[in-house]
Length: 77
Image (cartoon, rainbow, N blue to C red; front, side, top):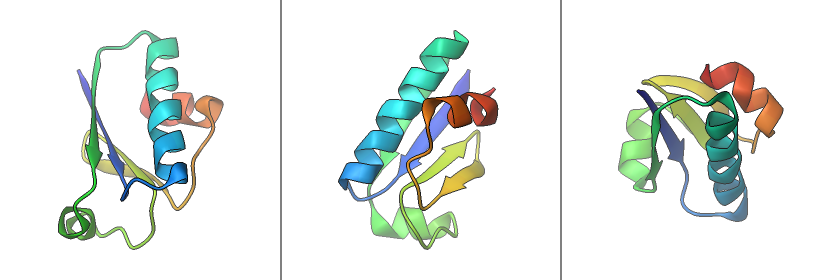
């Protein structure tokens, strides 16, 4: 099972990244768990200085943008 984390404080871009990540994972047909990380200290622990960010299985994949579903499909699998 993939662990997908969306790091962000809840801004519109953060919400869009979460929505796109869910759509990408669903399109790939994989088992996943998605978590929204909104705590600033937790976000900083990842070393991320710009949100939104996407972390897959502990690895930072996207920082500072709401990547498209197609981009995310390549990064999640």
